[in-house]
Structures are given as structure tokens and as C-alpha cells.
Image (cartoon, rainbow, N blue to C red; front, side, top):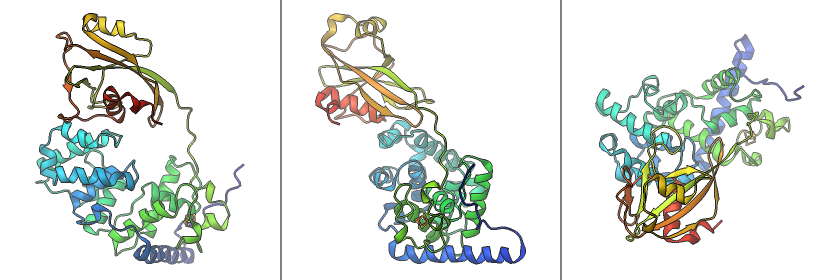
Length: 376
Ligand code: SF4
């Protein structure tokens, strides 16, 4: 049986307790905003200028990635695609190229598709109505709210991972994060504590508190502006909120990657299907873990006499959200490009731009400098 404290502070609908809840919600927002004025994160590139387009791009990048990692990607992205029009007109390969290494590439494909829809259906202007924004690919309820709140200062409750954690701890919401009852309770709380004014500041404040103080591990409760009213802190149960989802065991897969190089230092790359892992990105050909180089050459009708040198690289592990992949590389240096391989491109990393996954980029780098794979 659970010994967790119950959610005493969840707003209810009855008389005086309703007005107490309203007061608690106002205090929550007031303290958070006062803290943010002196401790909020400053200098994030999407804060200045805070245009709807820049906020949108940043919110998509921040969906699965921490701000510190996002900053250089964001800067390169908006330097190249400065507005919705240039993004909509861009080649998807160019978009994926600038996303290479950031992971979760469906975000980039959705951003690109959404830009085209904004050009076609909204005269190039990002909709201000969160309900309309939500119809665009890659934009969910919380992201839509975060965009309108920050870009237009419109009151719209958010419930990203940071806000969820702060609310679950402060108001003792204990249910499994994916259950609809928990989601409903958290959304109700998010709505209750979001103030009528200063929507942009409040949205930034709750995200900043979650990222820098109410962190997933080792939260800095002694520095928290909400510590006097925090239910989890009072119950000495901070580590129990939010409840952790039960994770199934992560499967481990193993795949062979054949890295073909020519005399000019170019690597043969194939485009992956748009759905699935690394969708739409370019990668060295992939095969079963047991596939031998001889089988690979035969399947591609490549003459073994073209092979100048061949070596097996060390296996390295790459983590995806739901499984781990052991990458087993084979480096095959060809004396000349075989006429029988087609459908892909010969990619010269010094000259060409393609969207590559972090694994593909590592394999390409290792083809020129094998020590890349020995570094931990
Ligand atoms: S007191 Fe601790 S657990 Fe509570 S909101 Fe602040 S940082 Fe989070």
C-alpha cells in the first residue's frame, strides 16, 4: 500500500476551500515570479529577440533536450533559416544537416512540414490561438501554450516536464505520470497557478525553476522560493514525486555498418526511410550483425578486387529512447567507386552537407581517423 501523502493542496470547487486554493495559487505564482526576477536564466538566444518563430524553434528543440545543448544548434539553425519562409523553402536535407547530433529527428521533419503549412494556410504567420497551433505537426498542448505565452504574452498554462515536476512535488500529485487522472490533476493545477498577467515571464519562470532548482535529481530545496509551501519537502518525500513510470527492460540490438570509402576520402551513404530510426537521415549501409563483408560485397555485386583495405572497428553502444544499439563497423577502403552501388551518394565531409545521425557522423569521422572510436 502506498504511504505517500495525498494531494491536499489540489484546488477543489467547494466554498472556503476554493478561495484558500485561489490564495495558494496566487502565492505560488507571486513567489515564483519574484524568484525569477533575480535568479531566472538570462541570455538564452531565443529570449532576444523573442519572436514567435524563434520561440517556436526553441520550444521544439527543447522538447527532448536540455537548454545548454540546444543553444549552439539553435544559433546555427536560425542563422541559416531566419524565418518561417526560409525554413519552408529549405531542402529537408539542409534542415536535417543542422539537426545532426541533436537527436529525435522527427522534430526536425515536423518543424519543416509545419513551416510549409504555416506558409500555405496562415500567410506565413504562426497562429496565436493555441488550439490552432496544436494542429501543426510536432506541436502538442503544452508546446502550443509555451509558444503563445512567450511570444504573445497570452495566458496559457504549460505542462512540460519541468512544470510537471514542480507541480507534482509542490502539490503532492502522486499518480503514475501517464495516467489520465494524473494528467487531468496536473493540468488543473497548471491552470490554477498560471497568473492572469505576465504570461511570458511566468512561463519562463516555471521552466527555469524546474531546470535549475527543482531538478529531477538532487533538487536545491534550500534555494527554492516555494519551499515554505512545498508538500513534498514538508513530507520529506521529494524523491517520490513525480511517481516514476515503470520502464520495461531495454532491449539490446546489434547491427553491422559497412563504411565504404574511396580514394578521395568520400564515404558511401544511403538515405534511410522517413519513418523509423534516423528517419530521412543519411547513413552508411546497415546489415544484420552476422553479415560478413564478403556477403555484403556479393549482395551489392562489388568486385572483391576493388577492396584496397578492410578492417573491423570496435563495437560501440548507442542509446535510443527505447533500446540500445551495438554498432559493429567494418571499414572498407575501395580503390575506385564500384558502378554497381547506386541509390546512395558519395559524401565528402569536408565539402558536402547532409543530415547525419550522431552514429553516422562518428562512423564517417572514424573512417578518416580510427582513433575516434577508441575514445570513451
Ligand atoms: S522545495 Fe524542493 S521539491 Fe519543492 S518545489 Fe522547491 S525544489 Fe521542488
